[in-house]
Amino acid sequence: MSIWLGSLIAFVYGTIVGSFLNVCIYRLPNDQSVVTPPSHCPRCNTKLKGLDLVPLFSFLLLGRKCRYCRTPISWRYFTVELITGLLFAATFARYGFSIDFFAYVLFVSALIIAFAVDMDLFIIPDQVSIAGVIIGVGRDIAHLIAGDNWLVRVPIPFAGYHLPIPQSVAGIIVCGGIFYLIAYVSFYVFRPKDEEELKDYEGAMGGGDVKLAAATGAVLGVVPALASFLIAVLLGTVFGVALIVAKSLAEKKGMPWRTEIPFGPYMVTGSLAVILLHPQLQNIWAAWMRLVTLG
Image (tube, rainbow, N blue to C red):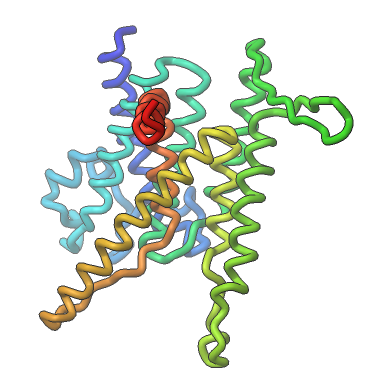
């Protein structure tokens, strides 16, 4: 199969998956089943038919309105389907028909849910992180069955022995542990002194970020996951400064401006960058190190 044909097929499947992800994005935060009831208009509760559910095309042909009650449909539905299709196609172009392709498109799907829900509600559903851990462990098992050398050897202090463990387990322990430590320390460092503010204080980093970090480590492995976290921090810093400046300018004009953006979307972006651009990122990093060290 040519890379172009494979990418096209992956895109089509991605848009179909994206349609399902829209259901998950809407229902998971509300603790609703993603299976029942069938897809329906949230306004008039009319069960949607096949022609209403064709990814991308139904949205455009219906003029982004419900066929039955004419309620406008959010552009998010179209955007999620399109982005999912594009990411599936890009993942196939990068990995081909392989174990990694199937693992990564599943994880990409979970990341899209995390991004959308965290942007809207500042939470990351536990189902996303649980899915990530399962995907990571399943990927390890598939590689081991295929005969790949897929274990990492962890040195045991003072024993002169290296313990072989699956990459997913190492990623869960290291990445989840680092974020748990950051969350624990920052909770007390940034704890408000005012009693009223303390009542609503939940910490500088949410538990969802810690769980997503563990899931990212499970799927990507320790070193790539840490690279994705570095990208997330850099993006968060750049966009954080930009938002502060934008808020300042908006306030001068009397315009409201939101500056609160959760860290989850940055983590998702960092993970996607590593999944799709890992070799190129290594080359960029090597070039940067040669520049700063004058090597």
